[in-house]
Amino acid sequence: MTSVAIARYGAGNVRSVELAVGRLGAEVVDDLGDADLAVLPGVGSARSAMEGLGPAADVLRERHARGRAILGICLGLQLALDESAEDGGVAGLGIVPGRAVRLESERVPRIGWATVDPGGDAYWFAHSYEAVTDSTVATSEGHAAIVEHGSFVGVQFHPEKSGAAGLRFLERCLSRV
Amino acid sequence: MPLPRLIPCLDVAGGRVVKGVRFQELRDVGDPVELGAAYSDGGADELVFLDISATLSSSAAAVGVAARVAEHVTIPFTFGGGIRTVVDATALLEAGADKISVNSAALARPELISELARSLGSQAVVVAIDTERGRVRSHAATRDAARGTVEWARECEARGAGELLVTSIDRDGTQDGYDLEQLSALRDAVSLPVIASGGAGNAGHVAAALEVAQAALLASILHENPARLVSLRDELRDLGVPLRDAA
Image (cartoon, each protein chain N blue to C red):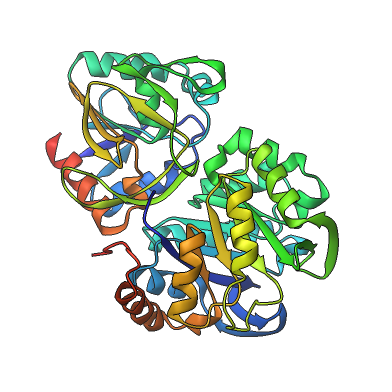
């Protein structure tokens, strides 16, 4: 059985991630360093998230250096970058070269379902910042949607809240570890 | 822009879904989890649960409903009703809700919006505005809030709200069509997503609202019947509204 550890630092969507990976038959465990997949969830602000992560930040960096799989979701993707422009500038984990910048969009926050290409499935987004990185492998309306760098995969959308398409995405993540 | 959203709204009282016309004459129409899951299966883009009994808060019960919904529904949902503090809101998000909605409590103490946005992120903070003839109503629309609707919308945005859920009180439950004039004024006044509510009677009404707003809240038009959502989506597609393929 695939084991999944979720970084717990006060992010609001931990429960939803836990329920989603549980639906797919994965076992949720506590050990962020040794689980088959570590998930860095995240809703909220970059500064409070980095403060909340504390020692988990180093565990995640070490995991990435060892080539173990990490999935960053929404703010979890943005935290993996070098820095975020949020709150006047916040240093990130530095796992993925790049930065998070204020979203340029007609309506901000950008909330709702949008198509991700390549692939063509629609997923649910809710964000005010976006990743700018050469590691972007899929986009949605010109914004980074999926980022891959070594063993890190980051998604700007919320697969745990994206119905059947989201569960299929998570299943692919679990099958790769 | 993301795709236009259809959001069934379930008014909850005492742990049951209820329906009333113009906030009056409540009747029991089902279980929130069963109805929510059925709407999700029927292609809803999000769900909104408004606990209309929560003015004298039953916050533990609300958290219980949110937790049960999260276990059975894999699309985003908003929970509103009786939220007065960051602690109330955090408990709902931790139970699995994606956004919370505040109304009278934000009118009474607008700093609440700023506190919620700082703690939860703007994307999780919906401010519900009940409006009638350009004025805001509070306390389930029973009182005049002594504010202009556009002025209040701008203050909500400045304080960090992430979305506005705008209900036209004089249209609510009437099925006479959304108040497009009010919605257009709000669209032009703020850059937040706007969810239109109150007055949907047919697919044409919904399509017209989605020309102006980013999402349409659906209540009376569905008659608490998830099959109606499926047929409404087909009618909207025929009218050229680019809805999500929910398969």
